[in-house]
Image 1 (tube, rainbow, N blue to C red):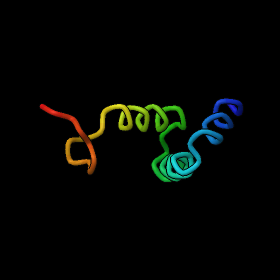
Image 2: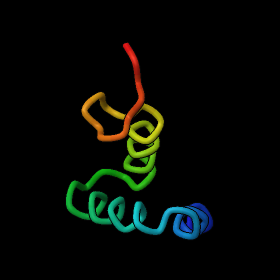
Image 3: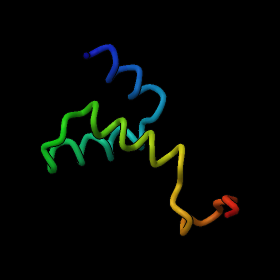
Image 4: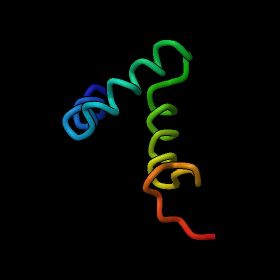
Amino acid sequence: MADVSASVTTRFTPYTLALGLVHRYTGLSLLTVTALAADLRAFPPPFTPGCRNTP
């Protein structure tokens, strides 16, 4: 699991810091938090600024 977190750290440093905080204070597993963040980045909510999703 250390290899996974290391590769994530090198690619998404700001995201990893936020994910670490969420993981620490919510008690969710790091893989769950990472999966949720990946879902949010893949499907941004409609109110996200700069989002070009059309209904």
